[in-house]
Length: 94
Image (cartoon, rainbow, N blue to C red):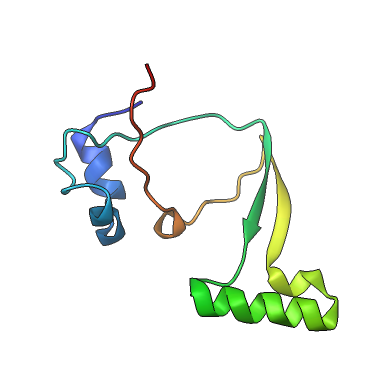
């Protein structure tokens, strides 16, 4: 967990304001982690886009229209689109 102000400011986006008061919010931190493997799913955005994709898949029988998916290996050097990441407020579990 990183609380470096420069890094938080670099990663800050207006969408994060839904969860945090600003880049100076004391509850805000950056989480770094190493990935050994994983999967990603990317589909249409918004309720209407998802509804249209689900209807298209239901009528065509083609699940591919729901979006893309793939595997990510720990040695994958693909850059992640930071603007597409949705921030989340994480509370301490005690």
